[in-house]
Image 1 (tube, rainbow, N blue to C red):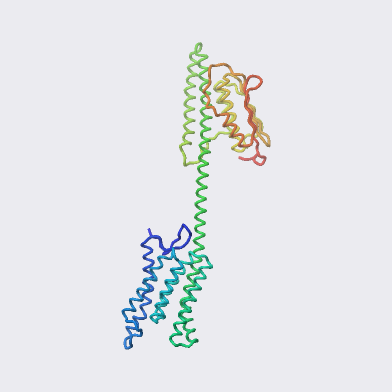
Image 2 (cartoon, rainbow, N blue to C red):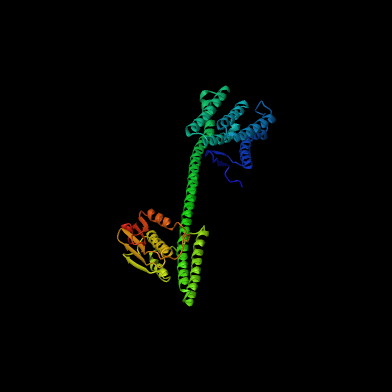
Length: 426
């Protein structure tokens, strides 16, 4: 599809050149040729139609028509070279005009040839520096003035008459030449600004793509952590229920059956939770899921484990509802991971959860008693829960510790700073 303008911007160097397509370039050149040749042939045609007067030129009529048509064709055709040879193009179009004007002694007939000259100057101004473009415009005007003044002086005219005639002729040519130079320089500046704007837009688009890709990587990492948390919590619950069922099965078959039904229900909950997280992972073109849990779901988390036979004691002090979302979610994940580990590795042991928030920080401590031997539980965990929690806490500038305590149990302790001006954040 050919764009409307007869000139276009060269994206490689921000210069203006003939339209890139061959059809548009030929249309442009033919339009310049027809406009010029019609004006050039008007005067000799009028002279022929007037009749009653002898042909004023020593050159035959047919030769004049051929020379003028050929000169206009060369002037228009050489514009094809303006992109690669702007200076040579100016020299050729000006040279043809002066050669025909002085050689045929008809400078007034050829004022239409100032159009290709102005176009050539315009195209050159779009490619040259401003000082050089202006210099070429001045050179063209001076060349036209000197040659035409010399020619009119050879006709025997007085100096005053010659200068007056030359000035009238040159002014009619100089005006479009100066206009072409100014327009070319203005267009060059606009094209340069457009190129810079395009580069900035491309850079911004690349930066946007990089940020989107980074956000997607972060979201996938969050979902992966979500999968770990869901799988770890529910698997630990399944193991706890199955262990309890095995213990009571020899003497209380009915109770064991009820526990196995709980195992089935727990498996359904786990499948639903994993399906939700996997749905987030597959939705690459939508925003992150808003199902991320925080300390507002603390009672629900503790109730989950109490319902599965874990003796959980909870002590929470301070305003936990107004914590920044990222701090609240991180503290919740720490508690969730600690309870999951306690259920997996110390089944039957009591767990003490203490959460305290003040003006500048929040502290989470989860301790459990010694493990009760229930068989080999190796390989149950995914192996990177505590590592993921540590990374989350350290990103927020907090402290993290986890390890065996003096009583043979296990303690996880986390401290996360809370900015004072965020204390009332929703």
